[in-house]
Length: 139
Image: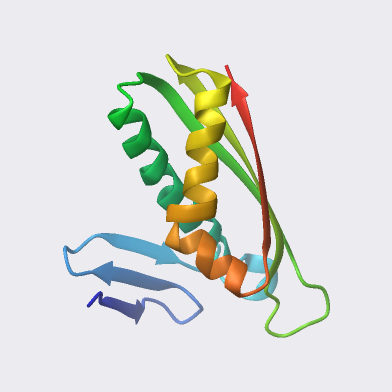
């Protein structure tokens, strides 16, 4: 079982989230929404989790294929539902950027395997109604 301890850290909306290994993430909301802007916004952490989950899958795939990764970056854009509470992620697009020994075809196959088969965060977001699209750039 996973456990996170989330503790309010100021008089506003900032929280520290700490896992079993004492890794910490600070969350807050922007100043224009009443926060101090001192941490990641909660909904954006879902996009970050999608990137990290998929990234782990892709690195594992490339390692098995003995592909060398010099640079791996993901740019993730999301759009939330308008006028709804809660406002879920409606669309998410990921641009996977790679530099290394992999071909574009191998990179596309690794990304497809991750997003369509292995990444639990992608599956969770899709189950909540998000449409996830992606593309690959070889640098």
